[in-house]
Length: 483
Image 1 (cartoon, rainbow, N blue to C red):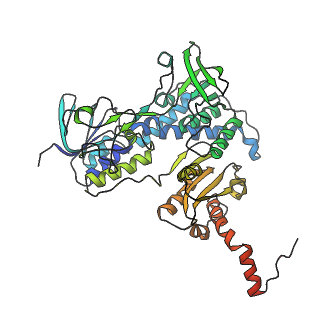
Image 2 (cartoon, rainbow, N blue to C red):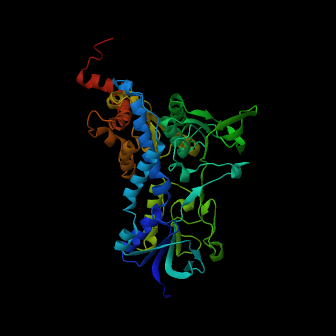
Image 3 (cartoon, one colour):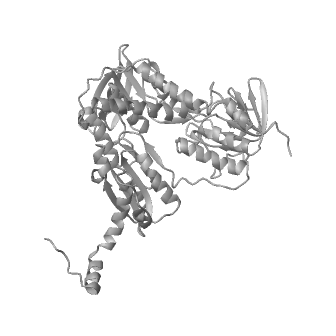
């Protein structure tokens, strides 16, 4: 058996890499963790999930201040936002979490941390700043970067991505956002609430294109009511730097109408590209490109001792997916358990207000698969807690198969990501809809909406004409007492 410096080497110190390195080191494997950035934590901590959710919360509080009269409070004339202070708060939140993702912590777990940009020089060896490290197994967890589409003029026009957005020294007066995915709509609402005039230019016919149209359209309606402008079905023809502003020209509609917009800032949020450049993967026979690294269901590359996890796969670009995939890698590479990935119950959430969360199949997916299904909807306007909080937009949409087993659940409403937790547990545990309906939920809570939508399935049976007829026959019930 070949001797190597380490049992396992992990390239990338983001969500997937940190999970893999932590698991391997705690299991007793001699572990090397290599990160190209100057600090551990990855895109999620420094440029993604953490700063964006911090900004979203700040914008939500400011939005409540400006709408105090809706809650019976005196109206408040809020002063303009000092974005430098907002950015400082974002940095403080990141710093607090960074302590958990520190070199010292991983050293205490038994993992050695090195910084730099490694490249494979052989199937088991990488070169790093003139040094060479070998490992019996490797894990590629290199993450992803903002995709920059080939839009004419973009390379000559100052623009923002998620890497620059959270460290602005002042709030832009206006912003054009290219893209209509989760990052685009979350940031559109957040900056609009802080006082930026926001326009969203989306090439598709709806925002959040993977979602059911009725749910995505409701999100768009809420944002539009708050002041965000949307241009759908828009093909960008080019962008230009005017010095004082950014100019965007696009073609929209069946008639090909050309429109032009100008704004102080331009945010490009049109997808991600896998970080695979400079690793020397081609030289050792690993198939990889901007769309991701090719792996099997055990997350092995073409070299069976080299695994990959996280955004660099180019499939499910969520931090929780990266953590899950890293767990699968540790099971296979460290414990030698033949575990395979299964994304059928991977939950997701878009953190607009209201939030849009889901698990399993949505209505669009069920229809495309041809599976027999039914749709059950419960609206937040019928939930007492939602009314008390003034958050009545949205609904729960439950998709059942022909045997009335859950295929998927989508929640559009207040704290939808948290409310989805009940369905994550129920669907992973194969809990029956009747069990959810029979469970006692505290009143008044938003969680009651899950019980209500499940209860509607039982109510259709329990209170059917057939059951009522049987009760009249056996117990002599006399039927309606009114009307």
